[in-house]
Image (tube, rainbow, N blue to C red):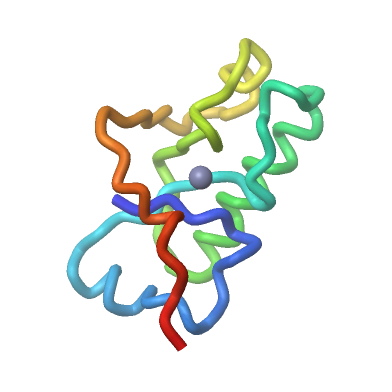
Amino acid sequence: MFFFQTRLLHHKRPLDRLLEEGHVIGAHTHRHPNLSTLQAIDQRREIETSKRQIEKITGQTVKYFRPPFGQFNEDTLNVRSDLKLVMWDVASFDWLFKERP
Ligand SMILES: [Zn+2]
């Protein structure tokens, strides 16, 4: 399962391969803010924009959501609608590696 911030979901991302191999793409907000610092209405906008864009690109219903930095609050749980919250036990540190030219 992969979680992309949808602001970065551009055509160079290996989305076709991910989908062909049966991976699932979950919502991870649009701009990757710390949701616990936002008002509920802004949290909802971040999550719904992310969900809508992924569904538009993949044609699949988004069912999972990962809060950026693992940070969320009561409002997040209220505005995520039916998305299942997915956290993690192991960090891949993939964000440390830049894309090769
Ligand atoms: Zn993230």
